[in-house]
Length: 202
Image 1 (tube, rainbow, N blue to C red):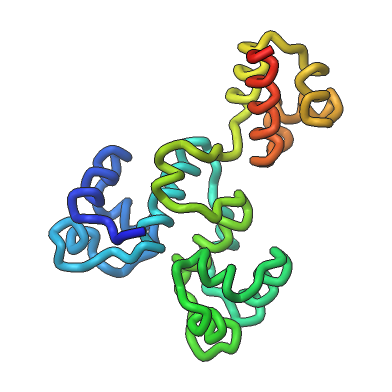
Image 2: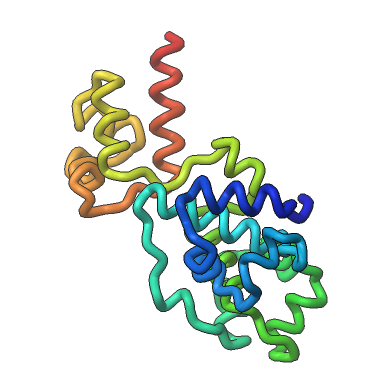
């Protein structure tokens, strides 16, 4: 994955309807956004990816937990990786970093930026260890909103009970999804869409 061009950065910001200050806040960056758009500073791949993913989350109404936006300790970094079942190499790849850099994070020999910590947690939470180009092309699905879930079911002509059975969940759980009282994880959403497409093909 390559660093974004000044033109790509400006276009993404304008398409999102953000001013430069709002864009800076999304990536927790002290570098003036204008420096990126003028080409005076090069935006790192991880920063570009964070910006794109946060825009995607905003589109579907997902709010970042403020607890995620604090500088992590070496212990928190190590525990997050272990809990996710990742090797240090896999974790480093998610942030476009080398293994050595990640090891230094866990040893406390190097401080992890808040932007990288948030990016890592977003990827873990929403299973997004993918490239930005894939995200933008819609290859993956973000966690669906209650309206998206209901519309998908109704468009497919399914009752709540029928839809629930397709993803091995109870009718009550499906009702929670549509009411917004429970979030449907990405894997269930993908399964539901696959099942709908399979029914159409039959």
